[in-house]
Image 1 (tube, rainbow, N blue to C red):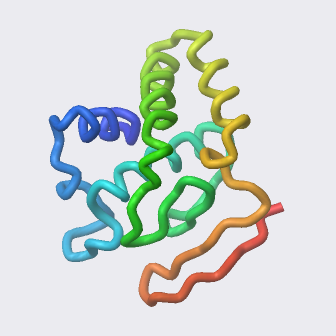
Image 2: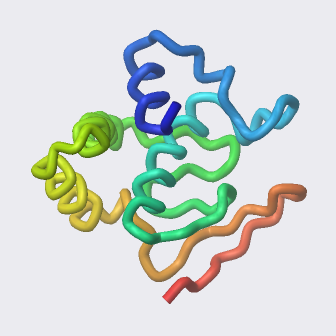
Image 3: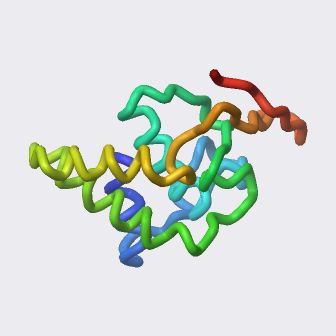
Amino acid sequence: MTAGETFRLVREGRLDPSSHGVAPGIPELAGEGFVLAELLWELAHRYGDELLLWDSWGGVPGPGELMDPALLDVLDRAAALLAAADAGIGQAEAELHALYVSDVRLHPGAEVVRHSPVTDDAVTVRLR
């Protein structure tokens, strides 16, 4: 199941987000915040922004943080466009890309915050 599909099922209340995460026993990298962030990582990877699972930027919450509720409508739109683009609808791909590049919460800028997967440390990393 793709991140977009998982996101949509969680938003529709048809999937328990606590069943998704990096591994059992790591609650900071599991649950609703993780599922929502996975959609943003899927978008970033789709458009060539290769990031680590523990990177955060814009709308991506850090480990244990919740997603900004103001971003949910944009993510609902992105998930719908992602599903349509994956189904081969060219206009959806163009709209998804335009949304990705126009909303600074969806794509990484010049820096990301890299959270350590084994400690509570976080460091700002320059990408460009």
